[in-house]
Image (cartoon, rainbow over all chains, first blue to last red; front, side, top):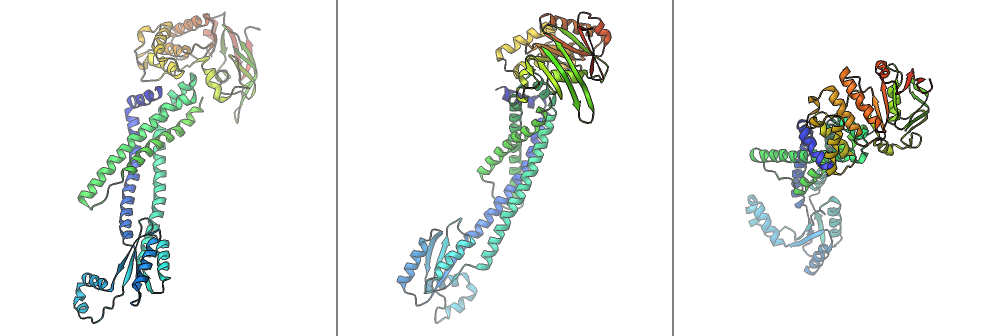
Length: 284
Length: 223
């Protein structure tokens, strides 16, 4: 109770200093927020592309329907597979006509339908990886009546390369930004605590235990971090609204990320305070 | 209450600040620690307060030995030993009452006891009417009295004062010294460091230790 009272009193006694510390925490977390916004939207864009990852299993014309049904069932039983749909030659031609209207005349004059019957294999979300795509293709190719299995290797490879680069960039930049944020938060709270070193000295002088001295500062750091997290949220929201209104459409960060941001702001603040106060606890 | 036995303090690159000091201040005794600037008075006070450890010998204060007490236990000694500084070291932006009650809060005094006890301490140092005054609204002498009241908050057995009158005029000095004698009369051991020999001569009943260049060169009890 004393710790909370003292932590709140610190904001009352030195509003400028504690306000500045909160603002610095806010700015540091704002950069992380912007990064989160960009990462989230990039992830959504990549997921949209990934949704289109499917395998077309082309079948010989002489394949028997019972064999096709069995293959459809067996491929559908693979855990990573979401659905397997049979496309007849006629349906393939209909689709081609619909998708390529410029060639409609050509299609109309065909004596024989040249398009093969096929199975369209869709993978479950989260399973649309290069390894799974290749494994399912290989499984399909094991049937004697399967002529080919295609998944747009080139663009799928590019998509997965992009995903890998995206993931590596997210980890590297995210870590760098988190480190910078941690340093800024640490410095801000160090300054705030340095300004109160006399208070810490007196507490030590009169026999307060280290735990007793630490607690209000820990809470003060957590509160400053929480306020900073709130500021960062507002600034990120403002940026999101601005971009949405004037530049392009984008999605807002998931609520769990915001809760995580606020919690990490508070945690950063508390941890930074513990480190910052350590030196002063050894002074007497 | 305070016993130094063959105490030395050597700092790396600076040599000895204290060399083989032995002195004993008993319960209820009032002792001055005198000497020129740089003679080792402040180092000795720091050792007695256990803010620093000797490099040789043993310091015993209120039953705790520098040989055995760990850093984690220092708070126990600090509650038994009051300390008054030359520059008061009050917390600015707080009132006289808050500066004292802060100590009681720090040491876990029940909340309902804090204000009455603080008011008693202010009355003891003659500042009942200044409870609500901010530090900068008090004179130097009054600030030192608040600092003394603060040092008494934990009901210590020993009071240490390092040049407590160094920043005060003659009248305020007399007031503070009278206060120290009153406190001492209640049985508290008192060790006061000062370079002001004129002041020391005003109190012939007090024990006097003199340091010179880190050595104890005079003890009035054995002179």
